[in-house]
Image (cartoon, rainbow, N blue to C red):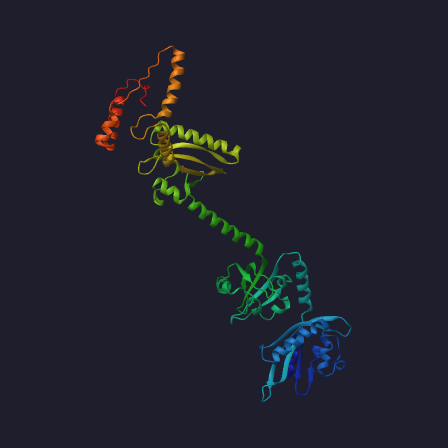
Length: 461
């Protein structure tokens, strides 16, 4: 049986070591020795025979992995490092071992393990690493075993920049990477990996990474899975840092959200119209001005006859709007403001200033209701030129009209008639009956005089 076992180890080129911790001796198999170019008698049985041949740059990492296993922190000891051959060159070996015996206090007394020459694989990995140096981000293989354990069979040096972890550290256990995923993203990431493992569909997602002492960063990854003969799932993928792009996208989203809010709350009506005439955005003021519900908002084609029911006036409005729209390109996209008479959903007539902005084959129309302003303007005009008590023209209007009529009569050679009227004994009437009756008297006389006018340009003031 032992001979058969030795034959298997020799055929598979597995070098065996057996460390007796209590005695301080190590058995190195013939394959272990010949793997490094040594004859049977070249290497003794001390631990120093092994330590002295580990590459100085790898020794501290090897000791750390051994110590972790001896302390019970890992189920197996595993490390990939360089060993010096007899001719002075170095080979990469994959060193695996496990405690097989402990004393009554639980201290390890014996470890058995194997050495495997992985120089060819390592050279292949170095070739991949050199190729990956020119790729922003990192190339990797990620393997998930049926029992849930996972590791990275290969990771290019770019993972150092993304996760702050050396590629070699990920070959044994992927939990170091998992520990650096943002807690808010971890559950979604796990679910996406499990879904990809079940369906063998492309895995693609974005998540945040927290590296101690560094800023939070966004990472985008994608990988193609395949099932191995052992039942594990192996992904071949690529990850890269998208922090700047993500921050810009988030800032753009926030800007768009703020802009939409501002547009929604603006005190003027706004709507956006596409090339097909669909009103795809309308703010609250637009809905209030015209009285439409969301379900009733018309298309541009439906809008024209509803807003401008008079066919003749509608033709004028459409022609003016299309002309202004055609000129917008030469004016930086600005559609000139014009005043229109617009009918709302319930048939009420409004005076509105309508303009807007053209962008591509879309446009945004603005609506400012000036109905009340026009009414106030008319009221102010009346107050400026009309007597508030009688409704007749006041002195200001009399002076303006008198000058105009004087010039007209001089041009035409026609006479100008001015009649001055007084109410006899008005003061006594006012004192006897009171100011209210006096005001009523003035209004009655004013109405009688106004009713006696025969021509449109006659004036009572």
